Image 1 (cartoon, rainbow, N blue to C red):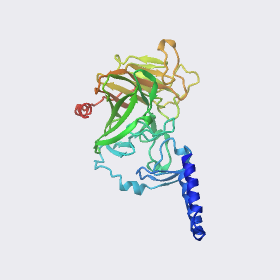
Image 2 (cartoon, one colour; image 1 turned 120 degrees about the vertical axis):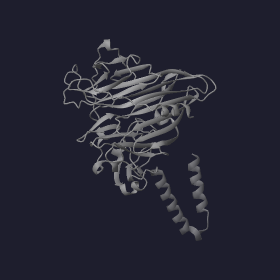
Image 3 (cartoon, helix red, strand yellow; image 1 turned 60 degrees about the horizontal axis):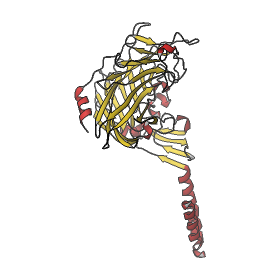
Image 4 (cartoon, one colour; image 1 turned 90 degrees about the vertical axis):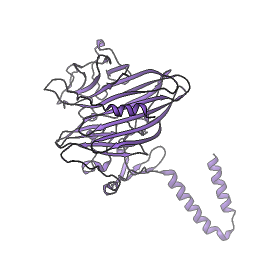
Length: 418
């Protein structure tokens, strides 16, 4: 209401001027209205990505939006696009590398908190990790080290979006396979687990690049959330080494208050292993068996779990061919998840004895949950996961999880450098 009153006051002031100035006043009014309409109907979202110029259908009350990059979830709003690969190449230098060895290319926007890691190997295979390059179900984009999203338009061959090459993806020399989708994760207070705070609502404090060479990348993003009225800081670290088909993700939680406080943390995904958009064929797996039904996994008996695109033999009408691809999450160190499960729906699971088949066409999920975890005032603790892709075993056999290499010097830095 105050804005409307201000506009009327502006026009009253204009028309109270002498008739001699009326033509100039009319021009001023027209310009004022034009600028006002322009500001009210068009949103500019320029974050320094330099990928191109993109005109999108507007959202949140805006008629149009102008951006220099497009995220997964926004592709269908693009009206006109002009990729500018020569422009982003000015700001996007590739580290020196040996062509006969695997090498990494990092693209990371520190201020916006998004980017991707691209690994090429001499055998023609590729491995890509996209970070915070998506909009969530609330239409908001997280900032920081959150798995998910697609490459910029101009990074795809012929600028055609390939949905299998989103999230975490693998190219075998012939085609792309989808390995992980946008991660579904949240944090909540120990007294209110139902009040989940999703990454796009975490306060983004900034990001850092600790390593950026052709052999190793180490990123950090920092965040703050309020849980049950208590402030927590979350520092996330991602480590990736050239040639690996997995990365290490560490989450460091700190109670910033002067009283004890607890938190829950949930990490999971409906990964659509094999092909983007479909859970068909995905079953659970651990070291010594496969899961065709919803089930709880003992995090002390097993150290990892994953999903395997091999077909569920107890689901009627489920037919191949299946890719045979598999993924995994391994929990590393002493802070193990309190709950690990396979299910058809996030947050709900039946014991395997209930014989509920993993049958959802698009939502067979795997989730890990920590908590409630009680932290003393100013106390810090860190959970560590290795997340990636397993190799194919013999026909019909278990996938083969890679041996995880942990650089304990990196872990010491993560756990002690505040």
